[in-house]
Image 1 (cartoon, rainbow, N blue to C red):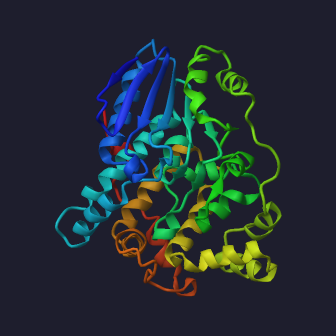
Image 2: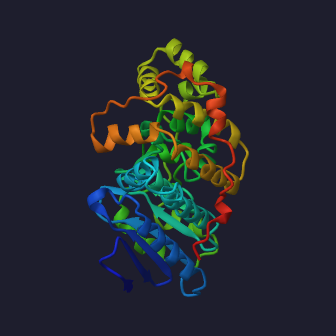
Image 3: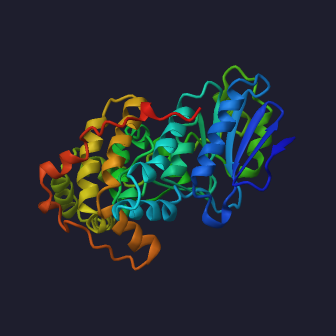
Length: 358
């Protein structure tokens, strides 16, 4: 074993021909910091030219979470400094620029990649795991793209994956911000394998790094591992989220009347109206787009969100003060004008291709 910087927030080691990256901030559910993003990107860059590393695996320390998302508190502080005129908007956007560049690096990585989504895997955590070649879920997995809960939008290129969910389940997850378990993640296509014991994964994967069909070899050595069946409430989700009209979606949920429909309706009504309107437009816009176009568009949107108030209010209510009572502006979907939504899609002149890490 060759381990570097064992005290760091990211542990990097090579086991045989397998490069292993371990997220190591268990006290904060392995939330991504900018230093972590840079450490992961540097390891991947180094291994890309190292013939002894034939595949890469992502895992996490602590047992509770793979990664609960980005370090929202740090971003909140930087963003508020921007809103108060103390720093340039480029300061808070640095995190997203490098995070999205890492997402793109993982998506296009020339060597096979595996992610063990053991525990909470949300937001930026799925931005790492979701773009790997083999995504492994298990009994402790809890997946979500919960950004609408804090007045934001599903970013990190996640819509590329969410569009591939059957039964319009990706639209439901993007707009509601609700959680799903590991078996559901496999059944809708956000994970590839379901494994009861994640502790055996690294050794098993290390044993098949040279396989010609790597994905099939991983599935075979882990005992097949695929969950099956149609996801719960698929019929309701498919009927309700059949278009991108938030008003119509809400009306269909009201008419449907099941317990699931009522809980989904309650969730939607608690979310930022701006987030819902922008996410609905974004879902429509990204249909059929390739990954690079999706992630480039995310970078445009995030620069506009940084300048607006709902994201900071959502973070305040959910994470800083924890009163769970955000004051959204505007308060109702009916009060959002088309020009308000159009603003978020206006090019800024600062594109993801302008970001350079190496």
